[in-house]
Image (cartoon, rainbow, N blue to C red):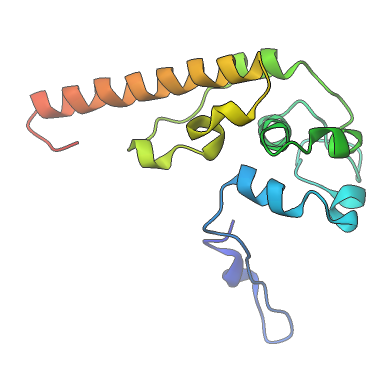
Length: 147
C-alpha cells in the first residue's frame, strides 16, 4: 500500500507509489489500455497459480467491478481464472464501515457508468453503507461524541 511502500526502499532500490490520490476504479481506467497491464495484471494474493488472479477473492472481484465501471472488463477478463457473476459477487461483499460519504469510491458515487443489473446492485450497497453511516452517527450523537 502506498502508505508504507517507501519502507521497503533501501540504498539500492527505491519503492515509490503512483496514484495514491486515485481510487481502484480510477487507476484501472487509466492503466487498462496499457499492453503490459493487459498481459500481466496481477491483483490477487490468493491464487495458487503464480501468474493468475483467482477471480473470486475480494481483491479480484473489486478489481473486476472497477474494470466494468471503467468499461474495460472485456479487455482484461482473460486475466482472471474464474469469471463469476459480478451481480452475485457484489451482493456477497461485506464492505468496511465508512467514516464519511466522501470515502465512497467512484463506483458507488457514479454508478451510472455500470451496466444494469450491476448498477442497481451497487446502488443498493451504497444505500446500505450510507444507512449504516447515518445510524452510527446518530448513535454517537446520543452518546455525546461528534460524528
